[in-house]
Image (cartoon, rainbow, N blue to C red):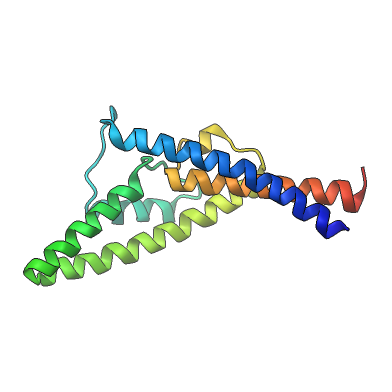
Length: 160
């Protein structure tokens, strides 16, 4: 019975997340379709390395533009196209470095986002402002799931 109650609570949270995901996707389309007013640094291998270095060094989640990962994906596709058309060794080497740095960056940021969601199960605007669209969605989903878990434990296990 307890498992059924928890699953029902979890499914309710997932339905709420689906609504949030849809609104994030719509906001994402709007953001990519318009020109950003803030100064956006060009995504380069050096810039990605700098972002990774700051993320490793600082305990706090560093601010990234909402479209950071989308712009990285565009850079990777562009470099892959150039490698295919020119067989450029330097681009190939840079591409491997970019992918490695991005994987490390994603790992560090995901760990921080999980910790933030565990500290407070209610999404914090100041934290969301530091996240990309994809990270924001992850953070909100984690907050919803952890909140549902806490409600389940408190109501069904510990008692009211």
